[in-house]
Image 1 (cartoon, helix red, strand yellow):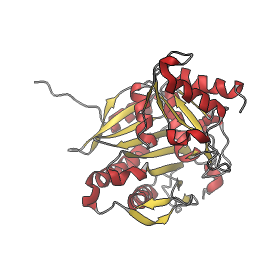
Image 2: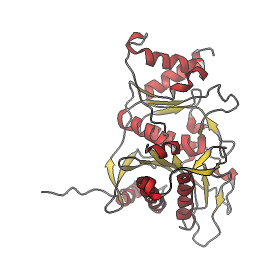
Image 3: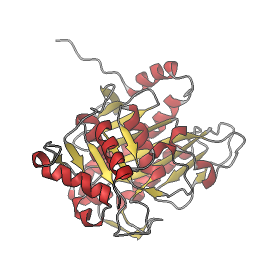
Image 4: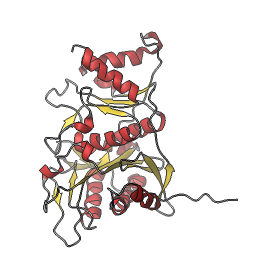
Length: 338
């Protein structure tokens, strides 16, 4: 019987480096992130046996209660990236300010922003969680990057990706040349290419949203979701299915795999908050991936990737996924009076 020879992440990236010479250090950068996510995957897989479930008894910079694994995953990423010699600065959703890498002869020229454990409210019920990351270049002439140097629009990203810690651990990556998925082979510890050239269908009949917030949405979102719920009885006459895991990594991976539209709009429940999800740690990297897979990503009024961030922990609404459905929602924002 012929054995299947999997292409490893490293092998893939060596080829990618030849095609994308603007990303000369991508192999080293991803080896750092691959090492960190393998450690986090192991801890997530241990569950209660690892002693890392439950509350950490602290809040993050956004005032949200932290899980123990939030804190541990954040520490793993900081430790594995800080001293590798490939990075100039790091920023985490769990920390108020960015961290500049101490000066060293082999100090890198890249910045990494990450959400260490997306969907961590799922961890204690054995739900799917993940890690999201975005890679930027450190501005020229900046020796000690601070918060302001991370405030680059999504279009400036060198690479972005996320891991899904589910029944299998999958790393999804783009360097601006399409989207590919790699599954962690637990015996060897290697990420291997299993989902080549992932593409999002232009049309879909799946939608993903937290329906418990429906009464707080704006008119354009209400209109779109009402159509989805009414299905074949609506003017569109299209039957829709609702999907909702509650962690962005799982919901976006479904969109990448089978098509769909993911919405997390502004709502009046917290009127002073412009949105729930963070631009720099979640929306920019996910938007880069979705666009590279043929989808679209918008606030409903503007392209996510073109927003000039004002703060490190800025939030905004999002609609992303299958292009034709995203464009329909954008159209409703432009034509529906709220």
